[in-house]
Length: 374
Image (cartoon, rainbow, N blue to C red):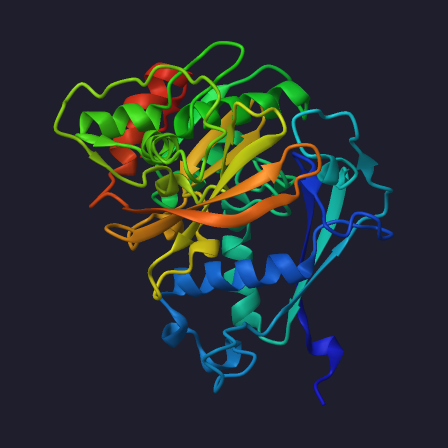
């Protein structure tokens, strides 16, 4: 048996920059979970090393198990203070309100019998926490933890070192506040789906695709429902006149999935008691639709909101894939389903998508972000 005195450790402190939406929020001392952090850190380190086959045998928990690619170290988080709870944030769901926690300072202890592995972790742990958030809604800036000695120069240099396409926008305030969170949600909606209130702003993704001769799925969904009076006698509530693409020879495509799989589309009907929810099902056996996350991450640090593209989530395998759209009639008062789901047909995704071109053209001029030179 190995002697614990022979174990090597890396101990440091994390500062929490934004609250975490924690699924075990009611537990004593709830903070970062090793069960969430370690698999992410394993994946990050393996990628830096050049792949699983480049990892030394002594670094691996089980060298023979290709399905369970875990590195041989342990990670532990300790918080000596009671977490602060945020309950008056209107822009998230009721289910998440009580789950928002913040610990001012958290101790992190990483230990292993392998000194070489610990040294490799020491070199790269700052970059790991710069690039990753944790808990629910992490891509929108929640659950940001950083080593307490990191500087603004460290932060931006990490983004450069890891070749991340990144942008930043200056915000007022030195710590978490609702307005900063609202700013992220507003910016993201304008990019992906558009804004209805307080003023109407068309989706930048829609505008970009129009410039390529592609119209997105929302207009197609409305056409399918409106033209099928037998299955949808309620009809859609008066909608805004469609915005035409600048070109006439466009194709309908499933576009919004390129920025992450939408949960569903919801439409109001002329019957105040009924709404239509449109859900998507993949027609591709080789494509796991439920795992498709947004390729864009937000991070708050100092007085800036950062946006960067997560390389490992770029939608390279999603092009020319077919998806079926299914309408569920719901009672708007109790959300119970009325009748059976009805398929309105299928659409394919576009043949390609240059996300760097898209963000460079629309996030700077429209949303006030500046590109970080890389």
